Length: 504
Image 1 (tube, rainbow, N blue to C red):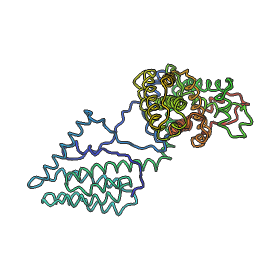
Image 2: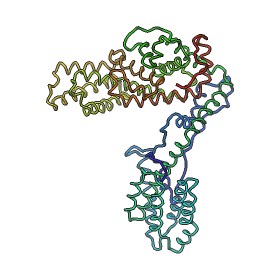
Image 3: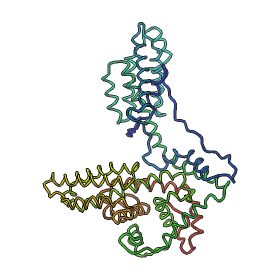
Image 4: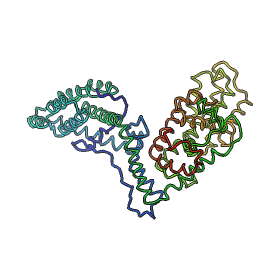
C-alpha cells in the first residue's frame, strides 16, 4: 500500500454528484491578484504584499511546515451551502438509481462514473507500478464496457467488487477500515457512492504523500522564488528595506539598553538560553543572530497602529498575528492556572484529571475573547473556574472554598484581564523567555527546563514554539542576505562576530 498515514480527505466526491452524469473533476483556482505593472514610483507596501503573498502563499506554507497537509473543507452543519450540496448529491444518486432500475437499464451515468473511477485509480499508482496499470486498463476498458452496456450486459456489481479489491491494494493504512465497510454494502448505487467518497480521500492521501516526498525540493524552491520576487521589487523601489532597517535598529537598541535585575530580566534570559561556557563569558557583545532573534520576538508585541512593519515579513504578518493571539491566550491560561493553584491546594491540583478539566474549561471560555471585551470574558472565566474548584473540592471530601476565598479567587482571576497584572506580566515574560530559548536551542531542548508556572501548558507551548521557530527559520532562509547587509551597517565592527546571518 502507499505509505501514507495522514488522515486528509481531498477531492470532494460530491464534485461528481452535482452533474447529470459525468463526475466533475476541477482543481482549486487562484486569483492572480499580484501585478508588477505599477511603475517603481507608485509601488506600495500593499502591492508588495499582494504580489508576493498571493503568488507564494502555498509554497511558503509547505516550506515552513514539516507536517503540512491538505484538509477537507467541512461545511457548517445546517448551512445553506451544505443543504444545497446535499440536495444536489442526493438528486444525482437518485437519478442513477432510476437509470439502473429501468427496463432495460440505462448505463450512461454508470459508465461516466466508472470512467472517473478508473482515472482516479490510475492517478494513485506510482510510476513503477506498470503491472497494476495494465491490469486496471484491461479490467476497466471503457470501449469494452460501453459495448456491454449497449447490449444490457454491464455487470456493475462485479466491476464494483474489482474496484474494491484494487482499493484495498492501493489505499493507505488509515483507509483500510473504510474500504472494508464498503464490502458489506449490497445496494449497487450506495456502493458506488461509497466507493467514490473513499476514492476522494485516497486521492488526497496521495497528494499529501507527494508533498511530503518533495518537501525538501519545494522548500528550496520556495526560498529561491520568494527571494527572487522580492529582489525584483527591490530593484524597482530601492527604499523597500527602510522599515526592515528600523525594525532591526530597534532590536539592537533593546539589547543595548540595560534592564532592571530580576528573576525574569534579560541577563537571566541570556544565561538560560546559553551553554555553560557561553554564560560564563556574559555579557556577550551583540551579534547579528542576537539582534535578529530579538527582532523576531518584538514582532509578537507589535503595535497594530504602527504601520512601519518590516517589509521582509509582510507575507508572514497574518501568521504572526495568529501567533500573537495564541501567545496572549496562553499567557492568560497559564495565569489563570497559577492563580487557581494557590486556592486549590496541592491535592486537587495534583490530580491530572482535574487540571485537564480546568484547562479545557478555561480554553473554551477564553475563545470568547475573540468576540467579547477581555474584561467581560474574564468575568465569566473567573466565576466558572471558581465554581469548578469549589465543587471539585467538595467531591474529593476536602474543605470547600469559603465565601471570602471564593470572592478573593474571583477578584484575582478578573484582574488577569489587565495587562499590567503582576501574575500576567511575569507569565508573559517567561513565555517570551521560552520562545527566545526556542530560537537559540530548539523547541525540544527548551522544554526540558521550563520556567516556573509554565509546566501546565507544556503541550501548548511546544506547539507555539514550533510554529514560531518554523516561521522565523523560513523567513531567515529567504531574507538572510538582506539582514546580513543591514546588520553590518548597524553593529560596530568589533561586535560583528558573524560574517553572515546563519540559521537560528
